[in-house]
Each structure stands twice: as structure tokens, then as C-alpha cells.
Image 1 (cartoon, rainbow, N blue to C red):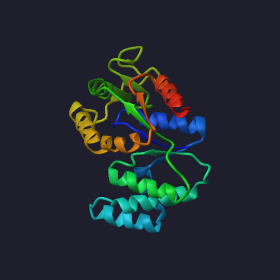
Image 2 (cartoon, rainbow, N blue to C red):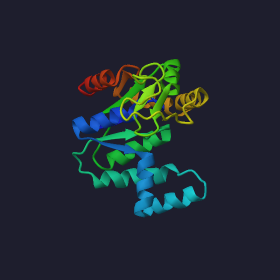
Image 3 (cartoon, rainbow, N blue to C red):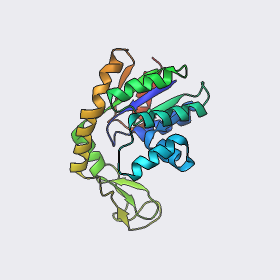
Image 4 (spheres, helix red, strand yellow):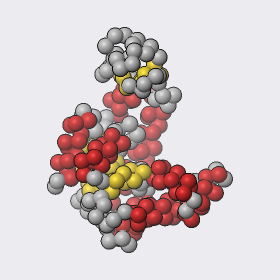
Length: 215
């Protein structure tokens, strides 16, 4: 099974992709991770990407497509994949069709995690972690049992990600709506888009995804 997992930053795509990997033996293909791996491995496509990034230029679609193709070639045809972060544009959606078709593959589902923007802002801006062990907390949903003390390691040091601000989150949402959401009609015409409520608990979202994949 080959699927695309869509949703704005903070919607929980990484968490749900991890569950799909564990439960179905699928492989998550994140373009960012693959680019870094190709550069590190020194592949032909990776060297092209490295030169462009070092020059401060964006990596063009054909290079990203090449990296995705190389990664798929490393996997067996029976290996299901989750595309995360790609495609982002209509041109990339067309390129992905060509990449898959050339390898006898096709998309089975496009899962969109639908979120409420205000609720997502509250979810992201309220999170913080223990500075020592990394345990996660939230201003509203998960405070330490004893104020100022980590439940796991007892540390009193906590930290927040500098980009977990309302301005940053709303900017990312705007970018998602402007660039990524427009690819949905391409897949809706094929009848493979499944919308899932991304504001539920991790287990609830996982259950909805599993139900969608079973259709």
C-alpha cells in the first residue's frame, strides 16, 4: 500500500506515520530525511543536491524526484510507503505519478489530517519539555503532577521550542493552505482522498486512519 499523509505542521503526521510503520511494516519517506541521506551517501543525485544547498539554492523538483526514485528502488515492490512532505505542489504530484508508474506502483490513499487552526495554535504554543530527559508536557493538557518538577526524572529545568509561537504556527498554516492543499483536488477526482479529524487523541486519529485505509 502506498499512501500520502497530508496535514499542516503540528497536525501529528510524524506520530501517525510512526504508528503505520509499526502496525503495517510501511516505510515513511520524508523528503528532508532522504535529501540528507543522499548527500551523506554521496550518490549522484545527492551530490547535485549538496551543491545546490551549499549555494543557497532550492533543490529543484527533478532532483527531489531522483532521490525518491532511488529510495524506492532500494525497496521491494511489496514494501508499502508513506509519503510525508511530498508532493507539495501540482507539479510534484504529476512527478510522483510518473515515479510510481515507472516502478509498477500507484497511490492507494491520500489521508488528510484536518485540523482547527485556533485549536492547533493552542496545542503547539502550549507544549514544553523537560530540559533533562525530554518528557513532554502542555500548559493545558498535561502539567507535571508537582508544579515545576518533571514527573519522570525530577528535574526542574523545562524548555520550549523557539518556533512554537502563534505567529510561526499561523504562517505555516497559511503556507500549507496556499501550497499543499491545492493538490487535493487532483486526488479527489480519483476518489482516493480520506479526511481524518486530526484534533482527536493519538489513538482516535489512528483508529480513523485505519478505518480509512480499510475502505
